[in-house]
Length: 403
View (cartoon, rainbow, N blue to C red):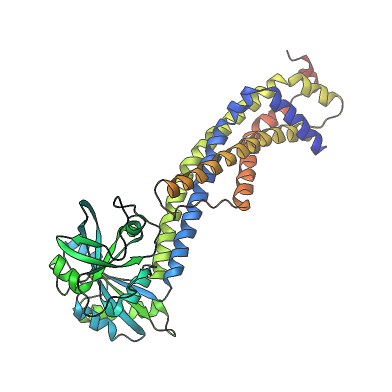
């Protein structure tokens, strides 16, 4: 019986031709938007979490500035004294500070601008590890007496910044000071981050005219300690040292786990807001299906009368029209899934090939496709409830006389 209903539904839908496709238009757009956005959102979240996993969960970041400072307009900073305070916290293994500034980079006769970071040779390992970086070629670490040496990011040595690649053995100029390139950095995946250049912290302090000041302090936690507990202890120690009350901090202490949670919350919020907008299209599509089904009931009134005359029950007529409206929704959903998949995969391809952004990925899962199809069938069925009920309530005699 159900198979016959599906057969009749398909015949009715195909018989209406272009009108059926126009009815499905709202479903196309809504499902395509949902599939593409969810797949891109899930792919981006997975890629970001993968990057966090590579960094390790035993890292803590201390940053200048906090809510209290934001509202008061203060200009707090981190310094060597803060490094010593953090070193004394129970569970802290290593501590390293870093400074960075947007700088003019000159190679041959070409000029570019990028961030140059100054790192302490003694803690270079954890600073690079906290960014998921390693030196692929050249000098693996700066030495204590190194001064005008530089390690260039991925975009430089593959030739994406200047006309020719910049690698080990070349010489670049940073703010009119010459530096020898002694290393080539691994890839992060974000073109802007892959344009960073790293130099010894003493050279950076001279280059930027900055002393005893850090943009961030990176902490590695000992093996048998919980990262969040150590982060809380660091916050208490710094608050006590600065004479601040809880909530008045002019600094921030964040673990990688906290960053992962915050990132996930932001991505989910953005995703749901855009999906809510896409649901408007589905609502419009549902109204279109309802309108089409009402028209179908009028066009097939005599057919309904014949079916009832030969023994069809009200429930049979109701089910027939619900299946037909659900089929319209599901077919629209199937086309929408195809369009949405094409959009998300196309966006991923453009991001990788044209903009060199490897973090943007489309995650197309069977659960997503099946869920979208089920949802579109549900939207179609719900939209057809009132027309189907009207059809089921028709009296056979009145239906047969209808012209």
